[in-house]
Image (cartoon, rainbow, N blue to C red; front, side, top):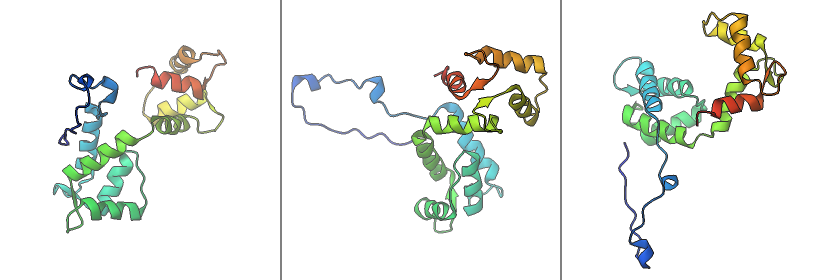
Length: 174
């Protein structure tokens, strides 16, 4: 994706001769799912299928990926990364989105996701909240199944999922 450049450092002692970067010093990269999501967003909103997005297509594609930019920000991106024709190709779009996704704060995304469930702003996800989300997603799950989901992750036994319990669920796989 991006060419990797090696930084040369002067050797000041024998300890530098066999330096191997630790896993934590490596640059983070996108998952295959994230790369695919970027590609699909571009292809979906490149409505005229010309391999480039204009202002409106770019704004909507970025919003679909979770980045709601103001008009001036989108115009600035097109000026900096687009062509003279006011269009941005996939390569530039992918570069921008990769940068933005990798610099995104995961807690911000988790808080936003929690808020989608907690529409009554109680700070908890109740059976009622879960039923609404399941219905919106077209899932036909009964009360018994939804209650079992809550029970599985309800650590304090109050019958609802708190924000902390939600974060624990979502971060368990990491």
